[in-house]
Length: 311
Length: 277
View 1 (cartoon, one colour):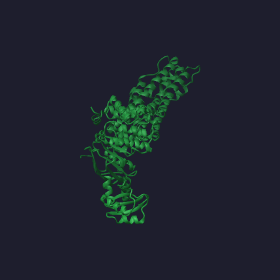
View 2 (cartoon, chains in turn cyan, blue; view 1 turned 45 degrees about the vertical axis):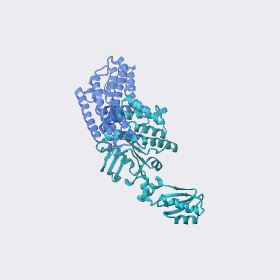
View 3 (tube, helix red, strand yellow; view 1 turned 45 degrees about the horizontal axis):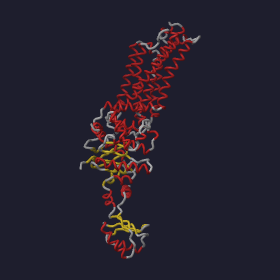
View 4 (cartoon, one colour; view 1 turned 135 degrees about the horizontal axis):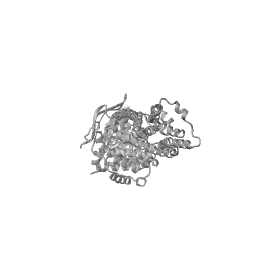
């Protein structure tokens, strides 16, 4: 599969401070990748470099086969961006904001108006299309901003903190929208966020940035395998495991670690195949087993393990 | 043509027009910008000549002959030759307001440029603008005309109001039209646009550093106000000078303004702006 985004040792400093330090990574066409990291990690700087707003001090990048440093406006013609601050002019209506961007992108007045109406309708904001953005909630602004980012059907979508400032309900709505957008037309999405739940829900691969450096890049499962030796399993025994039960678990074949939990035990095994004989042993001991579920580490657990390693 | 293919080759003029039209619409809806922009020209170009015209028509018009005799050289001769009742309106409406009028395009251009350049940063709309496929030069040009054209148009409308007010109020005293004249035409069509461009040139530079419209206006004011005082102090007799001298003054202002604008354009790059947001 062709790379939609490729960077090689991409570096940028603001004065003496390195905002991005030797970033090398690749995003396949149609892939959804999360760029994770705390504030100041270099996520927004990466998007600005990839869309040709900033010129790198070193290294190179290709976006859709183009160099953003020299062909920035061609790259920007094929990408859509939703910034953390929605970037809507509050003095204009929702429709005017979208039409304005469409006109800047070369659509005729008629086509821009038609396209804006369709997108605002699709994102559930049609009833407020002719209201000034000034009175909009953060969620409504995000929807308008998303409509604006998509009006030219971009091949790559850069989403910078798309759910920042949203309440849980609005976050769920926006994430639903993003999930459907990511699945559409094999669109490539680079999602910058420090909300790990949305990364886990939407992305196939994740890149973890820390103070401008890429600390890890890959599928959550692969990253977890690099951090942890085995497969975590949640054993539901109806009550915390006693010492006798824990000892039996620890003696089981392929069991790496075992600890009591409020509902039973949290264990780590070398591979999934170690679970059935372990359950059989417990049943033989007349320990009630209500469930034994392999529980892969969450994106949060992977992220924090990587960040702790980077500190 | 599909949306995608049109987007890869945006029509540059359309983009420029879209940005300028958006800025104009947005400014038109900002009371904080519109009211100061209209109050100053109204006071200067309507209230002042109205007061002067009414004073000249009163039973005892103010005597300006002592003041006229104090003016240097031959500046006052053309006025002193007039009947006493015509001297006030001719002096104020015909001569003194001309340099003051130049404040209008200067101020309008400065306020609009601050809104167009620094205002984008303040409203957090600059980044998304930079993410659009509009070349740096087109973006700069669009911003420039979105401040320049309204400044000139409002100045011209202001002058029209001024001319009507002056001629209507002064007619019973002068029995002829005071404005327009050839020299007023030079001021309106040559010097005023030059002064507006000068205001733009200053504000473009200032806005690159400022993070808000207010900061840009303060920084710009520090540069523009001395220019206003200098202009008013030095050019009180602008309309008494010959046509070529007035054209020359305009040409000098144009040169300075263009130098500032060209320098501003060179520094107006996405990379530079992205580092300030």
